[in-house]
Amino acid sequence: MQNLQINRMNTLFKSSNLGKMSLANRFIRSATWEGMADDVGKCSPRLIELMTELAKGGVGLIITGHAYVHQNGRHSPWQLGIDRDGLVPGLKNMTRAVHEQGGKIAVQLGYGGAYLSKSRLRSLTGTDIQEAVMAFGQAAMRAKEADFDAVQIFAAHGFLLSQFLCPRYNDRTDDYGGNIQNRARVLLEVLGAVRQAVGPNYPVLIKLNAQDFVENGLILQDAIQVGLMLEEGGIDAIELSGGLLNNPNVLRTHISSDADEAYLQNEAREFKEKIKVPLILVGGIRSYSVACRLIEQGVADYISMCRPFICEPDLVKRWQSGNRIKAACISCNNCVEQAKAGHGISCIPLQESETETFFPQMTEIIPASSPHPPGTNYRISIGLEQVAAGFSPVIKIEMEFNDKVLGQPPYFPLNTDDYEKVSSVVARILHESGLLS
Image 1 (cartoon, helix red, strand yellow):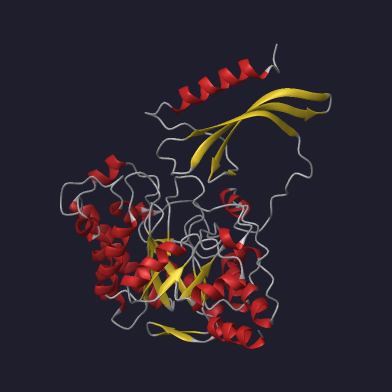
Image 2: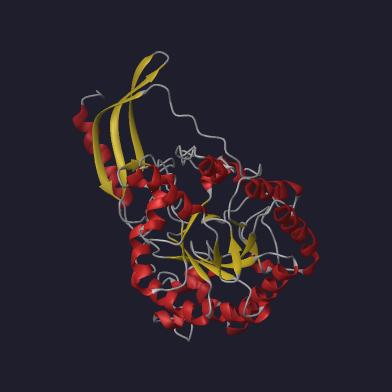
């Protein structure tokens, strides 16, 4: 058993090369919007401090949150920018701070689009597309000038490049729509522009959806074809993710057991059968033993996490020291809510209710329609809610995904009969319950 543990440690903490970049271990901090840049996209001291703590904590490669490459591609407030030369000095301060701690850092290059409609994607002209492609190349040149160790192209979660890959949003009839070769065209043009800007030896990574998990979304077989095209185009590594930002639970909650972790590992296995470039896997990894297994079984070459590092920036160093207790992150996603509120991303765990106050008498489950992903339901319950004066009869409607209640209010997609179905069930169980006279 002792020899097995030593081998596992050697696997995860053995240095390796990702392209021409040498990394101290197999752990990568996956990009997540931090909400810590200033109002015009400049790198702030708070953001530099966050990256410095990750480097001190032993993360092998830090990937920043998505930095917008063009003003039209800015997605959210307090988002890091890399769209103009005046931002380079601040970015260089960030890379210098990380390098002083012996760390490596990449910048994720992104273009907004998570909330674009099908009609807006359709209306982009060839000139619009080429302007975006050139913006990626120019941003990559700034990244190299700012001494980033690598760049990552963001093509996941329904942002612009991801939308081009997704038939649900991309119904163009020109060279950028239709079959997967056409839908991947703009992504390959972006890779070409980035590679031309930084040269053949500079590491270029990509974050790609394995699946969109929505009706008429990007499917695994097409994603693998995209991966093969990227490999031929000179990509150095693929980080595999999944889901769209405008669908519930893209950041899954309540990851409480090993079985809940690494929820994209099956997709990763299929990628590894076809693709030779290193594969970085993200998605719910919380345990040292799970990370070991993924590497040892060849499911992935690198382990990518973000929320655990928000909670414990020194997690890698803790595991390396021999303390292999599972990451403290409870996957409540309140860290993201802090950023949305303008406080910057930070770990403030949601407190579970100490006592149950709702006692259901009758519950019925109704499947939700698209664009809710498969496995999403409306949970309709009638029961008693404990209040100060005693108990009061109530009706409760919740969203659930894969049998787990989501921390969000229910919503009904337009052009479906979800509202009528739920209303009908509410009326019937109110009549049958006997709680109301």
